[in-house]
Image (cartoon, rainbow, N blue to C red; front, top):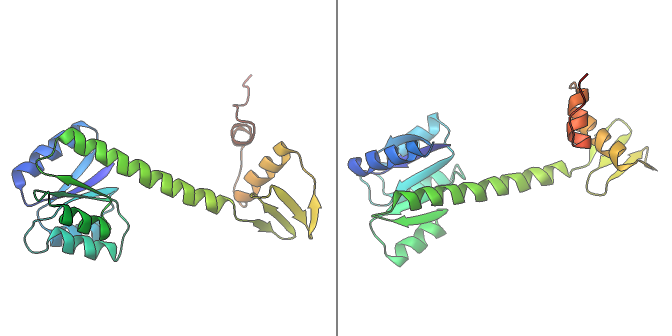
Length: 193
């Protein structure tokens, strides 16, 4: 997981970077909001940790600029534990809020929690996409209804036949191996002799 850590406290950045790298994260550092925005234009990140009190652009200004272009998960990090600041950050689009000084373990736990939520949302969107009706020439397959039609006439298929046809139609124009069919349709590997 690639994380952008944005904080003007260089010592804190170094400590958090070291801890997060030990946890298996790849960490890039910026020390003001403007640098962070520029970095996001040239690199992709999975999550950002953003300090509120920074020079040039505050964390709130940076968050506002990023939200105009991206839904990157963002955890706000601040020495100000004021409830109004937390509410403002969350209302502006932050995904979570951590007060300084923070326990690095808690920060890592929050990173993982935000990532899980983001991953589940992306999977839900992909699941909805997978439910769209597939059409090739006169053949249409509706995954939501588990129904197949040719020229608007319903075709009766077994569950395995339906799953096989769905796999083939979603990969139309691409080779599908016997192993892929067996694994994805039957849920088991083909026997090797």
